[in-house]
Image 1: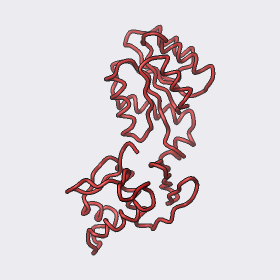
Image 2: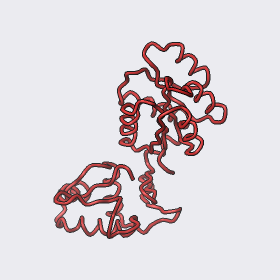
Image 3: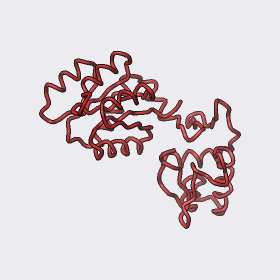
Image 4: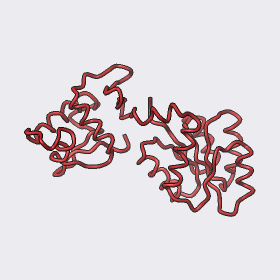
Length: 231
């Protein structure tokens, strides 16, 4: 299973960018559009799992985009509305929106609404999403302890898998070799930090397109290793 994708449509760049960054940090893939027309086109091309849609936009309004999307898809839609736009909220819900968030809103609240809507629409998918991670061209099944590429299981040793799983569960965070050794091998492990380098090399050989120039599992010079957050 691939990571769920979310389309964010808002004509205010600051809001659009901050929402996108918050969702990416939670593991979603994010598509962006700056107006109703391009948002509708992005929806039809990308077929996201959920749409976050601002109501007040120039040209094609969010309510009209919602109506058009709902005419051809059951994809869940969350509207972003102005504080006093009660009529817009009612219209949005009448044409098929699943929920709405009133501006100004906290990113934490919006993320919670996203998770709730996705669980409500497809509980099984939301549950399994926690255990399957899409990373570059490979998929990591945390529950099944396996890594696959195009359906083919990659020959990954248990400790290397544990190292990969740990980095992915803390994607975007840099860890020193000492920290990884303690967290993955255990504080009482008698080995040296070179062990981490050996396993990282093995991981890169399997999952990177070019292991000599890794783009997924990267080295932060003088610090340690990081799993890229945007892969």
